[in-house]
Length: 188
Image 1 (cartoon, rainbow, N blue to C red):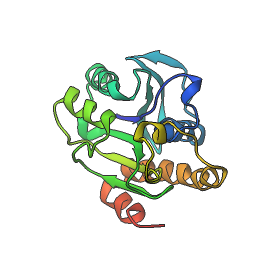
Image 2 (tube, rainbow, N blue to C red; image 1 turned 180 degrees about the vertical axis):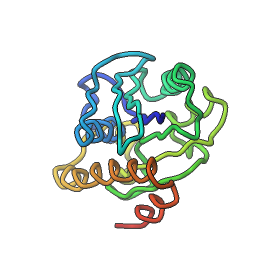
Image 3 (spheres, rainbow, N blue to C red; image 1 turned 180 degrees about the horizontal axis):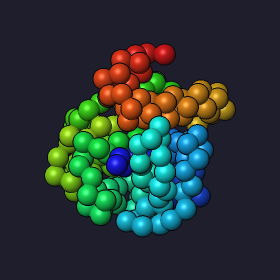
Image 4 (tube, one colour; image 1 turned 45 degrees about the horizontal axis):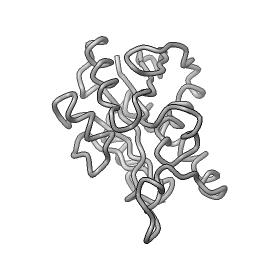
């Protein structure tokens, strides 16, 4: 079994923001693989289903970004899943809008949601998909930028990006992470 978590903030106020691209990707995975997000447990909105024969739990933590690790820790513990079988999808301001970067492990890189997950599960060895949301303009406050909405042009780019994320997850589950990295870890 695999657990696939998209990071974001709950409530309508944050829908469509840069920080919620992880939630948006989970919604695309739910749509593509017909996995209803139909129960709340472990401080997350969750769904259970299959991707190419692999059983998965998909989840959107409802703890707010900076406490995402609370939900992830509960999910891993309850389902008895190793961190290596966890995939976390989240925003990255160091990547151009729509660019993907897949990693097997790594530091938080300044991302508070990932920092909290690493702290709560006791390590950084879990696969992740970083989704580029673009760098903040000079003079902008980081929080204002990541909690801001995408432009119409960026939204158009992200339609395809979310499809790529769903495809990358499938590759990671059925082949190996290296295959997904080789396909998606390059500039668009």
